[in-house]
Length: 174
Image 1 (cartoon, rainbow, N blue to C red):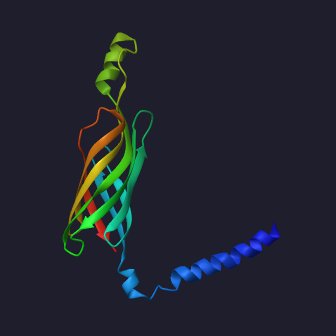
Image 2 (image 1 turned 120 degrees about the vertical axis):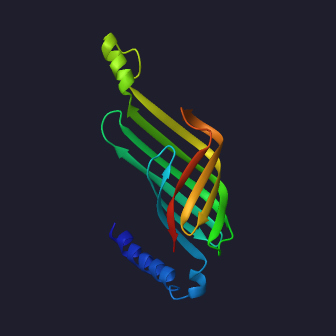
Image 3 (image 1 turned 90 degrees about the vertical axis):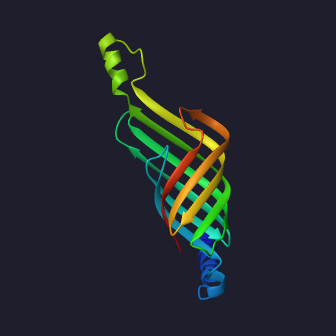
C-alpha cells in the first residue's frame, strides 16, 4: 500500500509539469477558448453555461435546478458539441448536435380546488413537463448575447413540451 502512494506523487508532479510547461506559449493558448454564462430556456427558467473548445470546435454544458417543495420544482441539463463559423467576428454561429433532459413540476390550483370540491382525487393536483432528446442545435452570438434553437431529431421522453426548444442569455468567451 505504501509503495503505491510513493509512485503516485512523482506521477502527479510529472503531469503537472507537462501541462503547465507551455503556459507561456501564447500561440498554443490562442487555440483554446472557454465560455461562461447564464441564460434562460423554455423548459428550464435559469441555466448556468460552461464551455471549453479548441479552435472552432466547442463542447458546452448547461444546467441548473430548483426545489421549493413537493410538486414545485424544476431541473434541466444539456450538453452540446458544436462547430463555430465566423469565430473571429463579433457575430458568429455555432452549429452541431446536443442532448439533454429537462423536468418541471408545479401545483395546479384549479385541479386542487376541483379535487377538494369533490372530496376525491379525480385530477392530478400538479402539472408537469418532461423532455429528453437528442437534437440539432444552432447558436447565434452577437457581442456575448446568444440565442439557441434546438430541434429534436429523436425524443427519448416527452410530456407536454414544445416541438422546438430555445434558449437565450449572455456568455463571455475567454
